Amino acid sequence: MTTPGRVIVAGGCGAVGALLTAALREAGRQVLVVDPAADPAAPGMLRADLTAPDTRLAAALDGADIVVLAVPDVVAGAALPVLARLLPPHTLLVETLSVKTPIAAALHTYRPGAPTLGINPMFAPDLGLPGRPVVAVRHHDAPVAAEFVAALRDWGATVVETTADEHDRITAAVQVLTHAAILAFGIALDRLDVPDAAARVAAPPHTVLRALLARVSGGTAEVYHDIQLTNPYAATARRALAGAVADLDAATDALPDFAALLDRARAALGDGQPAAAQLCGQLFAALPRDPGAVGGPSEERSRT
Image 1 (cartoon, one colour):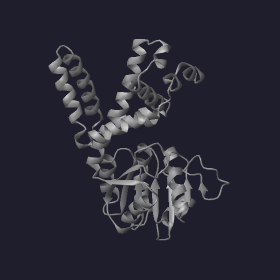
Image 2 (tube, rainbow, N blue to C red):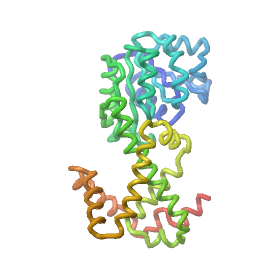
Image 3 (cartoon, rainbow, N blue to C red):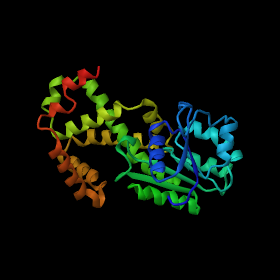
């Protein structure tokens, strides 16, 4: 970003906040991290509550050019009335929530017409920005919002711009549905009471699913719960998953029905099917020769 100015990253001690703080500072921005967990003795850190700002935080907000909300949905919602009172009209507000339609409505109430951008990094922050997808929603567009989007691209992110509603419909598929399918796989494994030897004889698809299950189930429960709870299309996605399993169960009685179901599933990939098949081959080729090396019995026991 080329325009100088002061940036506040609320929730800068969290994973997403720390990722954006590092990128902004590397770009030469003066960043103040505001977080209840901040070390007050560290430079550029302020231990404060965004929903009940003290005098120092209120002054910082009044002088900020950009404020990034890398905080949970409930904190962002509670902070909006405060920010509406303290932020100058020109200040860009950047929210990082995983659901966009509720915050879009709240912004229309509390900061109508003020520059506001929504972003959603569609990856675990420890993977870094370069080459990773970031969804951007220009709630209220302005040159400073366009500049922030350009900065994301400069930092190596692949930015996909959508509306708030389109964002939530997309993330219901790529987050809610995906996580639900992975967790359902793990719950089914638990119900089947599969012997430990299964990991050592697993075909590549099962091995990859075990790796995905380890990633999701080893994450923070609050993060995955929020995704399943707050997206307005989440229940629809889970019902689609349950209905698909029921369709699969019914289709096993006759080969033509099963073949038609396979065609239906393949059609969901559209024109991306050949590229997806090629990627699958690359992933399988990169797996260890011993399937037990990925999520095998010895690894599982070491985590208990």
